[in-house]
Image (cartoon, rainbow, N blue to C red; front, side, top):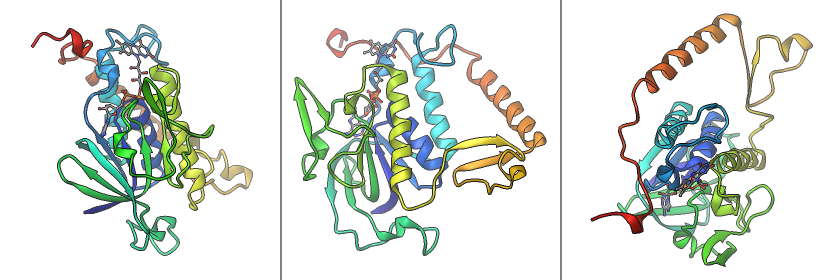
Length: 259
Ligand SMILES: Cc1cc2nc3c(=O)[nH]c(=O)nc-3n(C[C@H](O)[C@H](O)[C@H](O)COP(=O)(O)OP(=O)(O)OC[C@H]3O[C@@H](n4cnc5c(N)ncnc54)[C@H](O)[C@@H]3O)c2cc1C
């Protein structure tokens, strides 16, 4: 049994993008993914922002996963089989007495390799898979041939602490929209949490402080030397990641697979 602040169920564009934001704000974030993002079937991704001549979709998923890891999220390959409510008496990981996460876990999560995890927040980002949510009273499931989770305009479900992101929350079937929604849902979670949060921004030195303002929670100021160091690191890493074609085979619809 391990305790987390946030468990993200599903490691496609929505889940990984959500994890970047929660982990960057210091929430102990675990992404549990069964490994089957539908984006793996794309042949060449030409409408994701930032790639003017497109990008290999498996490469993009790798990069999103690496980004979540660099932000501090832990990733596990497993299928979540059940989410259940707990009574919330026990503390989850806590940085101190004022840490809102110390008020205890709300959910107990079970995986197909028999891991049990307790967590205060769950972000469900599993496209149309919802079986693991059936024991949670108050989650609205919408059946339109495929199943979706009913949410408000910011990704909150009817259960406090449980959010849905991406295609699962009825967002358009587009990678950029689902990634953006994952980010929006994570920011909603941060705003709902008791820890102070303003925006996740990186600003040049003095941007806030030289105007007599404290640096807001979630923001960072960096001097020129640090900015150049990070840019050099990003140039080197990007060059390395794009040296070779992606090694994974093209995937297609399972019904077309030759066994
Ligand atoms: C052939 C094809 C081409 C496409 N081309 C484009 C394109 O060109 N441009 C574009 O914008 N979009 C494209 N898409 C759509 C895009 O792939 C999806 O809209 C996007 O991947 C949805 O993101 P998501 O994170 O919501 O879901 P997904 O990417 O499907 O991620 C869901 C994740 O949840 C995991 N999961 C499910 N159940 C569980 C569980 N119980 N426990 C743990 N993990 C679980 C899955 O394994 C998966 O990794 C294409 C789709 C297809 C099929």
